[in-house]
Amino acid sequence: FNSWHGEKNHGSQYLLTQVLKQRFGFDGLVVGDWNGHGQIPGCTNENCAQAANAGLDIYMVPTAAWKPLYHNLLAQLKSGEIAQSRVDDAVRRILRVKLRAGLFDRPGPAKRALSGKLELIGAAEHRAVARDAVRKSLVLLKNNQSLLPLSPKSNILLTGPAADDIGLQSGGWTISWQGTGNLNSDFPGGSSIYQGFATQVKAAGGQIQLSKDGSFRQKPDVAVVVFGEEPYAEGNGDIDNLEFQRGNKTALELLKSLKRQGIPVVSVFLSGRPLWVNPELNQSDAFVAAWLPGSEGAGIADVLLKAASGKVQYDFHGKLSYSWPAEPTQFKVNLNDGQTPLLPYGFGLSYASKDSGPLSKALPEQAAGGNGAHEPLPLFERAAKAPWQFWLRSGSQMAPVSANVQTLGDMQFKSIDRRVQEDGREISFGGKVDNAVALASNFPRDLRGYRESNAVLELQINPLQPVQGLNLSLGCGEQCGGSVDMTPLLKGKTGWQTLSIDLACFKGTDFGKVQQSFVLSSKAANKVQLSDIRLLPGLAEKASLSCQ
Image (cartoon, rainbow, N blue to C red):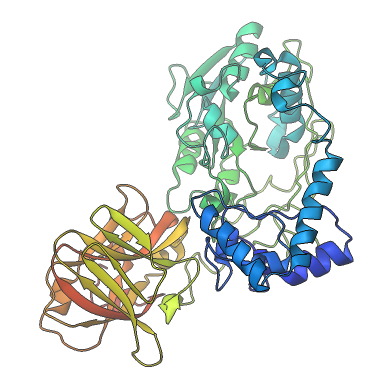
């Protein structure tokens, strides 16, 4: 959740009260995000007077934490930690918004005029609006030799992973939180991009072929390749590098395959943001930023295809609402930020302009400065470094660490003093079940830069007894991750040891979505102390365990 100059917004009295409510005169209500108050230093999901005092009017606490939070807030009001005037202000704001919305005058939702009219879902009028929005949001970035619009009477290959996938073209927050795993059958009444093309091409007497991998029965006149990001929502979509399909260029290989066969290529790129796609742009004769068109993918064919008569059906009207990056690390997208983007804010070609644009020449495909990480990344130094948090697992039980001494199942975790107060941790593995301590994040983190820069995972560890069956792992989701056996590295060792493990040794890890940056586990009885866990670039060849 967002911070401003290092201070969590949920606890910023300056932003919520001084700026928003006082300086801007905002008289509505301020509601928190999903347990976001718990990220304020000194707070938990169950206990956080700081957020109310900062100006939060409604806590969003959707879990069982709401009950202790409720009782703690009452106690803090009675003790004076939260002023009565602050509660009065919050109540006043909540009631004011409800009055303005007419909630005290209107009937309940079940008694309203359109309640229960399920036939209105997917109404033709509503779908027409959605399809029009698709047409108007498309941005044409490249159109060499005026390849677009295409004749519907030609032989067209629709290919790519998203050519016939309404789920991929809809993105996150679709049916489920992350929007993953959805099928076309989950969208009754919706249309995929392929379906839009197929309807118009068949009606005009042309030929349409569909394949995910670029294969075809008859060589096409043109290939329309639909590819882009996998669905994501919120923090799961966070990246530290703007390169598309970094380290796994499957879409680029498909484009190259078609170009090698002499087939003109139109790329339709689905994404929730501008990304560095110079290699993909170079392999495309035309390139359309389609964003996430949603359930009316047929709107894309309306713009990319001519009418059967040969006339343009709809021209491009979309313009970039963000600049398009010239480098994978060009994150600043605001005007006057002193950066020169590949394409500026407001860019967008059209059929009417007949301008091929600045992308008609080959673009550099090697990122300036490379993609590797260059700075150490601390994971634990006296405390777990955000976004990482210590978690314990004992058998089937799991719990976040919330105390200096904590027991779960037959394992114990406690703070110790090594150099300074509480700068280390001691873990006792009981040996009755599989136990683990992990540094975990609520959302996957992109650590590919460290893998690419030959980084090591370095830790300070002190075995308090002979080590047996001790494993160190990284985790990236179910059935995803890599592990190394620490036992040989610590055999016969006593006292504090500095160990470094080449990240290449964690085979099976997808470094683009690391959720546990450190997992120390054992089914045997072990007792170790830890301090100073970090990622260090460029040291793989000198690691205690190297896999170069």
